[in-house]
Amino acid sequence: MTAPQSIHTGSLDVLGGEVLLDVSHVSMGYGDGEHEKRILEDLNLKVGHSEFVSIVGPSGVGKTTLLRGLSGLLPPKRGTVSVAGQTITGPHPDIAAVFQDYSRSLMPWMTTRENVAFPLQGQGVGRRERNRRAEESLEEVGLSGQGDKYPWEMSGGMQQRVAIARALAYHAKVLLMDEPFASVDAQTRFDLEDLVVNLREALGVTIVLVTHDVDEAIYLADRVIVIAEKPATVVDVIETGFGTVRDQVDTKADPRFQDARGRILTRLRKA
Ligand SMILES: Nc1ncnc2c1ncn2[C@@H]1O[C@H](COP(=O)(O)OP(=O)(O)O)[C@@H](O)[C@H]1O
Ligand SMILES: [Mg+2]
Image 1 (cartoon, rainbow, N blue to C red):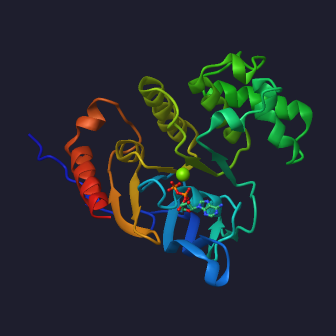
Image 2: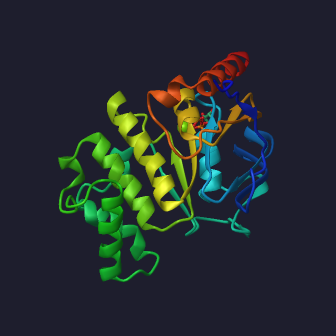
């Protein structure tokens, strides 16, 4: 019998290989000067190619704020975010985001195919190629042949698949996800989690996902970054060591999963 494997304290640096996303001394907040509300303080994180990083922290800690910073929607007060060596100063073609509220992110007057293809227009992609990429991405998320449907004809889980397809069609190097499965039922959530696991394996896309759900963070990630306190900072980093394959039953019964869960919940209780 082999000894049970234990979890490892991870580092804020990549495990090996090249850095793709580099978050360096990032502080973020709202308002200016003495009215500044500080949300995140001196956050550092390097993410490698094809890595899956979860960032977990309590509601209100600043997870969405951080993703706004990583996606170029809100500039950090201090520090820099760079992708493939380029500093981000606004929305960037290497970075795509999927947010929690699919009902607001899809346009009801556009078909699924049009929803997926539409953002590519802004990138100067021609119509035929836009439609080709939309079909390809819909197939990748298990929605082939559904391109003519409207979002309101689909279940919540299917709509969130469309939102993921739209991000994939962008051919971004980094996929940012903000609590993407928070508004669907438990079984749909597991299906979507496994879809994302498989996409990472099949396409080699780099994923940074933020969530308040500790189990989801551990299940999906190679590294879990725990953020807490006010202003928020990194309080723990855990390497899961699960590789690229997951199983909703076996992985969650793995002693490493249980160890990580106990450690993170204990740490967040102190926060
Ligand atoms: N546009 C904004 N203006 C001022 N404060 C904000 C704004 N957006 C979020 N906040 C505040 O920033 C803090 C972190 O919010 P958020 O990043 O949404 O947290 P989380 O996603 O972890 O729940 C909260 O106190 C929230 O009220
Ligand atoms: Mg949030």
